[in-house]
Image 1 (cartoon, rainbow, N blue to C red):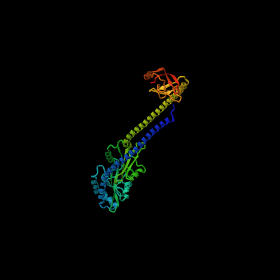
Image 2 (cartoon, rainbow, N blue to C red):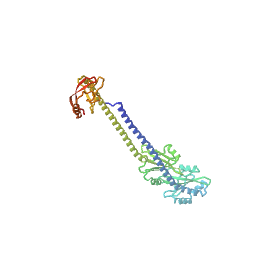
Image 3 (cartoon, rainbow, N blue to C red):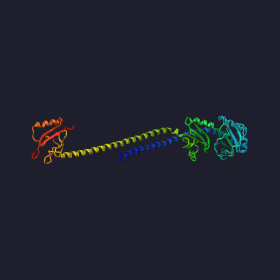
Image 4 (cartoon, rainbow, N blue to C red):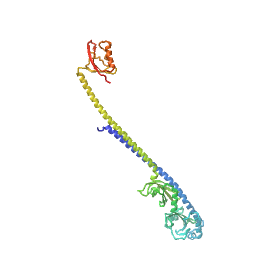
Length: 430
């Protein structure tokens, strides 16, 4: 039997509710992921602020040395670049530089360059002729009177043992004339060890950049993703607004990372901190799996429930159809029975458990001329012909014993005085 429109609607309602459940589950997972990403960005940004502060303190120890040396040289009152070229190359200046070197860790050196960018003194002899006039940090210090610490790009030229970048300050005469620069180097290996000590199993990828985006140090812990490079305007916008966080990756095929951008206080340096998204979002991922399982389970539950309801409705309809057919057959049988009873010479009757007539054939001689029938009364009640008391007692005992009887004879007198001689038979129905 095909389903009716109502059955199909039941299935459609169940399917619609299941789909709505899955849709709601997806919305919950999407919203929770957005919240998890925002929380992860805030956490990485906070960590980046700490790392930027630590980097600033690390650089401050070097900068203080340069400031002290700068002040002592400027206190000598050198006025012109020519005087500076002569005095800065002197042995007394070299002894000053060596004394300042006692405050630095081994492996760094201090160098002095004159106003033309030529190396004139160093703590690490021999004095190899070199010139930095074309380097951007030298030009920045030369062309800007109030320049603070300047940072070079990474170069192997100044550090035969490995890569390094330089930090430098301007040396001025009493009237502000540019006399040269004082410079020291920062080994990449030392910065790498510095970030490795801070990492503490966080799987960090730390990138130290100049404020123009040029990379100085790139540190990546085992299992971490490389920090994302500056992205067009977003990275510079974040630097200009004091830092922030975004999602990115060096390689589009690589796992996504969450990157925080953190300018260092007081210095033209920016610390980028990157952590793989899958590590930061693992708690969300576990939660999302549970939510998806619950949502899917609930959708399946709805489908099963509505399937059972639809099946029950279909079964009930089949039963109702069978019952309707049975009732129709019964009505047909009753109609035929009435037709037979009306055509037959005999008549039929029924009594309830209290022996009152509940049904009597229309041709039964138990109705008076005025329509008064025996319905609702017992056989011995009404216009019965007078008999001896034991006559009815014997019949009552048979009825009380719920026994069948045949050809029981009694008389009835109508209101007109006519006597009817009756003979009946009965079978008890349990």
